[in-house]
Each structure stands twice: as C-alpha cells, then as structure tokens.
Length: 309
Ligand code: FDA
Image (cartoon, rainbow, N blue to C red; front, side, top):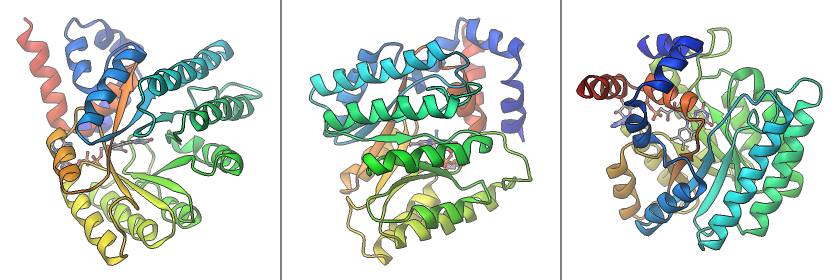
C-alpha cells in the first residue's frame, strides 16, 4: 500500500524536487547506486567480481524525451563497455539497458531508434566478449520491448530479456522465451500497474513467480532468478535440482546494496550470482522504486533525513 502511494507520489514534480535537493539524498543514493561516473561503476564491478560475483551494469536514466538524449545514452553504453573491456572485466560484466532510455517512447520513430541504438550496444558488447539484457519497464512498453528483443536475437542470440511476474501475461511469455540460448531474467516487477494487467496482491505475485520459474527451469533457456526473497531463492534451488540443472546453467541476480551477505553466501555455495550495478546522475526513478519496494528502505531514508538535522 505504502509502496504504491510512494510510486504515485514519485511522479509529482514537487516530490522529485524535494528528494533531489534534500542534502541527505546523496548518502541514501550511495547505498543503492555505484556513483555518478562510468569509472565508479567499473570500480564497484571490480570489487564485486573479486568476491566471485558477476555484474550487469546499468547506466541510469529512463523516459528519454529527446533524440539527442537517446543518442547520448547509446554513447554512454559504448563508453562503459570500452572501460569494462579495458579493465579486463567483460568475462564477468555485462550491461542492462532500458529501451525507454534509448528512445523507445520518442514520438514517430521511437521504437526504430531504440532498436538501432540497442543494436549498436549489442555490437559493442559482442566485440567486448559480453552480453546485453533489456530491462523491462511499464506494461505499455512490454510488447514493443519484446519485439525489439526478437529483432536483436536474430543477430545477437544471447541478448537477455526481463519478465515481470506481476503481469498476468508473463507465464505465457516465459513459455515463448524458454528456448535454447534464451536468457530470461525473472523479477516480480517494480512499477505501479493497474489491476487490468497485473496481480495486486503480493502473494499472487509470488505464486505467479513460482509458476513462471517452473516454466523457465523446465525449458531449455538460461533462467536468471532476480529476487531477494528468501522463499523464492529456496524454491529456485529446488526447481533447479528437480530439473537436473547444474549451477552455471541458471543464475541468481540481486541489486547492488541489497542483501550483499546473501549474494556472497550463494556464490560461496557454488552458485552463479550477478549483481545489478546502476550508476549515473539520473538516479531518481531508480531510488524511488527501491524505496517503494520495502518499508525498511523508506525507514532508512527517513532515519537518514532526521539524523542530519
Ligand atoms: P520483495 O521486495 O517482495 O522482497 C521479498 C523479501 O525479500 C522480503 O520480505 C525480505 O525477506 C527479502 N528482502 C528484500 N529486500 C531485502 C533487503 N534489503 N534486506 C533484507 N531482506 C530483503 N523490475 C522491473 O520491473 N524491471 C526490471 O528490468 C528489473 N530488473 C531487475 C534486476 C535485478 C537483478 C533485480 C534483483 C530486480 C530487478 N527488478 C526489475 C526489480 C524487481 O522487479 C523487484 O521490484 C525487486 O527485486 C524487489 O522484489 P524482490 O523479488 O526482491 O522481493
């Protein structure tokens, strides 16, 4: 309830201004975001990779409204991939890209521009010896993003997709994508979606997650289990064993700064664990989704605000 209210409030320009200019925000941001610059992301990745974790790096930004901004995001990814490659990290570091950040929502040719930009990023990633995963955003963009994915996979078959278990449609999407070579990150979903398209009840989202995971684990693709939920992590392990999947034929994924001990515990147990590492100036939307997910995160934010006074 609180989370939904926060996601709605985060759309207000007044709330955005308040959060962005609060002196404390930077400290709170630092818990969830690697830094402003690509080198901050490279350093954070290096540290995680040294602890036997893998990473997927996200250049923060979404809802691009100008062509020049979409071009700049593409260039930021090309620069990031070059830096990851120079640092020798691309064996364990890939990138995550939001289609809205590379122009998907621009009027007219938006989808075409996003595809072109994503193609340029996939080309650079392939040259650097790594992969790209397309993040998933609001349900209104799901068809478009899956369409872009299908185009990209013709030339870059290892391009990953994200599916969100809160959407009614997702079990069917899992069936479509549980095919050889297909990398699918399954998450619960982080946006404020209406009842017409998404489960509203947390338990129903979790049940859907398990149904989707069964499809992915039973299929011939590469499931990426993106959750911090201990019950779902345990169920993923059971399903992997039931489907005779060896560690390395699927992976766990968690967000930077969230349950780092659990990330290391799974890695020590021989599992592949990838951490989603966001960096950049455009942290507002990302931070608000993290706060909305968990009352404890909101409490952390409020405590930080109060302790500054
Ligand atoms: P949830 O938030 O429901 O938490 C369940 C339980 O996990 C809690 O009850 C608690 O036990 C434990 N837990 C959670 N946070 C904890 C913490 N900080 N400390 C201790 N325990 C904690 N979404 C999207 O819409 N599109 C996308 O492309 C992506 N991409 C993505 C990548 C990766 C790698 C991850 C991990 C997540 C995403 N998400 C996403 C976000 C996702 O949809 C979801 O909002 C968050 O992961 C939160 O959901 P959880 O599954 O973690 O469970």
